[in-house]
Structures are given as structure tokens and as C-alpha cells.
Length: 173
Image (cartoon, rainbow, N blue to C red; front, side, top):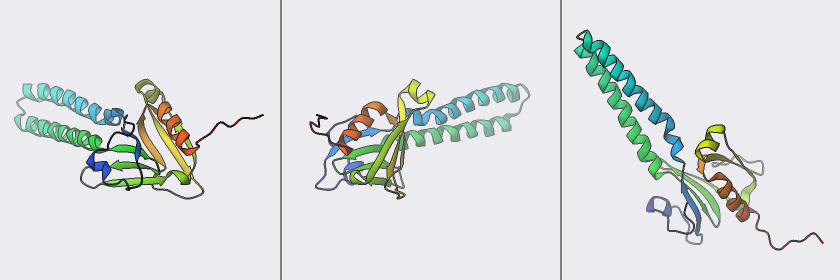
């Protein structure tokens, strides 16, 4: 998590001259869990099929099995590359979610438009340390309404709420 550090150029190009970055995080690596499970599951399956077809002399089938696993591995590498360029950024004026390796997508919501914000954590999210932000604005559909796989969700939630609802020394005397 960075506070005020300079954003990578893939994010910096979307910042306006009059705003400054306050928070910038990558999405939690748990976003890759499914891809990891697919690669390892495919490897186990390919190994078992190799043993079974290898004993029966099915060389052509083995080639297809291992090419299929190689495609799963390539897909995994692609997912990791995409994850490495995805950022959730909070600036002094807005929230941004940048995603995509080839086709770049930038979702944005001005801080002034946020009327409600909450975060949710599943059991797996609590165990691994990630959550989901849910943003609402005054009756409008926004490009940025959910941000999944946010690391340090409690800390980030409090920091973003502090920006949304800056409080002074209010007293109830």
C-alpha cells in the first residue's frame, strides 16, 4: 500500500494535474486462486492420464493432454501479468480502478459523488486478508460500484471514509 508515492506510469497517465494520489494498491493476490487451482489440478490430471495412457501406449493422447495443460499454464501467466498492472487508486478527488493488460479499462468515481460506502469480507477473505468495497452514489449507476479483492480492507475503508467525510473537532456539547 502506498501513500503519496508516485504511481506507475500505467496509472499516472490517468491522474489529473490538480489531484494527488493518496492511496494506491494492487488487488489482493487471491484474485489468482482460481487460476492457480486450475494449473495444479490440470497438472495432476495430466500426470494421472500420462500414467494411464503411458501404460497403454497412447502417445498421441499424451501429446494432446500435455498441450492442454500448457494452455492452462499460459492462461495462468496471462492472469498474473494482468494482475500486475491492475491498481485501485484513491486520489484527492476520485477513486480509480485500472484493469487490463492489452485493453485498458479505467473505472472512476468522484469522491464527491459517493453517498455510501461499505466493505464486505467472505470467510476466505477474512482468512487471506482481502475484502470488497461497495460504493453507492445518489441514485446513479456508476462505472465504479464494486472493487473486489482489496487488501487491508479495514485500514483502507477507514482511510477512504476519512477522505469522504473529513471531520474536524466536532463536539456534542
